[in-house]
Length: 267
Ligand code: ARG
Image 1 (cartoon, rainbow, N blue to C red):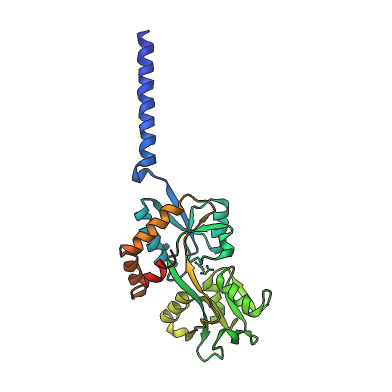
Image 2: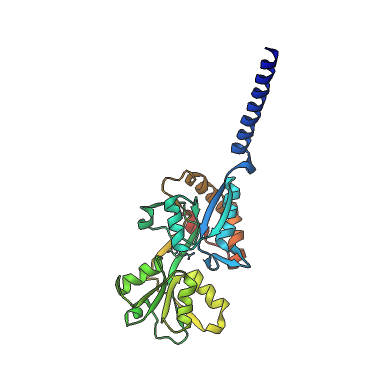
């Protein structure tokens, strides 16, 4: 009898130990689950690979937001199309990749509040006769990254199945096509093409702006539909914008002060 009691006490203690261990891993900061964040790291300065590491404005931003929200994140480069597939299958918790919030995507995914203002612009060689979006309609070949708002914008100008639109898996390949003469222009997010021109003066490219043809866009973090993360992430994004962390990261990458009011007006 005594032995039985001892055995059951041992079991009881072990059971309680296991329970308390479970408890800490759920509530304790560093025991929490790490969120899988997917990206297409071929879109400098937002996300790109540097010595095998994924870096960029978006990476600093998501790390700041995660810290504020008290969650752990691990950012992984998977590519643009796979990013959407992973969120469809819920094998990832979050996508960050200079992703424009739009109605079409909102049908399949949830977005946080906006964190960045963007618009499409046109990258062309110096001396090109392309001076506006309308000029692309004069038989020009335009390279874009597949399934981006850049592709959509060009389709709006040239027609959906126009074979003058060359689609690439990532934006670097679209720019390479321009470099090699296989395209007359690239249409992509302003910051990306402007940064490219700045960093590659030897290519002799220029950026054409056409705010009449290309809409204002806002980036958001993208989640599977119904994700429970949205409320916490929205709160954390607002906080890093309000407490100056956002401005710090913005200045690190763009050397100028951000217009945070334009983001707050969207919240
Ligand atoms: N903002 C554009 C869009 O959402 C382009 C984003 C491309 N991002 C990338 N990491 N390649 O369609």
